[in-house]
Amino acid sequence: MIYFIGIPGLIPFYLCFYNIDLIFLEFDKEMFVIYSSVILSFLGAVYWGLYLNTKNKVAIIFSVIPCVYAFFVLAYDLKFEPTLWYLILGYLVVLGFDFFFYFREKIIKTDYFILRLMLTTGIMPAHILFII
Image (cartoon, rainbow, N blue to C red; front, side, top):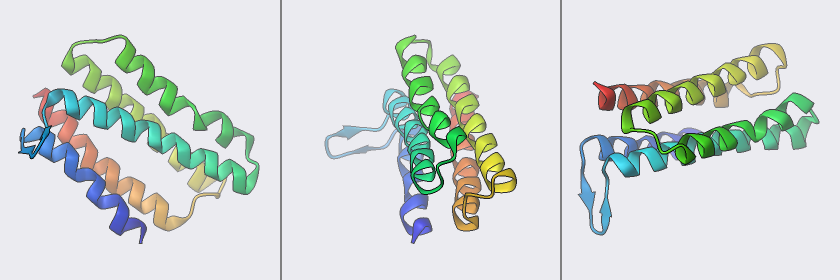
């Protein structure tokens, strides 16, 4: 079920990359940055849920970091390419925490960990292709 819901989340990244417009939405560079920031923020919410289930203090502290980070990336109103590099860094940091919580703390389920690897593998090329 998580794959059925998670994998389609990659679609807007590639609609933006190919600059495809649907009805009243313009999938362009600006939409790409906004969507990427929202997704990065969403990833922190997972750690809020982990805290509620496990009371792991690192999880609750980390749960707000992706959202605050994405907020500051947008707030600095950088040019497009530096913004993408900062978003890539954010995704890699979150993936690092996924590794930490999966291998060390053992509080992330295998299905979710595999999904996160797949999604990060799908997100990174869209960002890098936009830069080059």
